[in-house]
Image 1 (cartoon, one colour):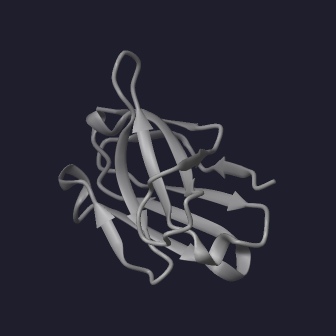
Image 2 (tube, one colour):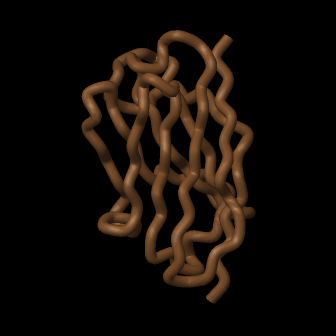
Length: 121
């Protein structure tokens, strides 16, 4: 059974940077689309970025030019580099692996446990 373990969250000042990591167990990682979502209390979880098995990427508009998603299939790990962090980036960030296997989009997510990112202004 595939499991996702996130790390790298914490406290950053506005304008600062953090890098999130998500390590996946299991042997199908390279064939799956991966992504990062975030959620604040009382709001729906929102998609932040995805990366397909062909390394194609998608970003929500508010993070374009600031966040970079990448993957290392040899390490079964996906990363989210977050630069120029803003207070509105404060949330719990969740890693997702698409169980559907289409390889390009998150349609049936397996979730990590989440990691808190707090940006102080």
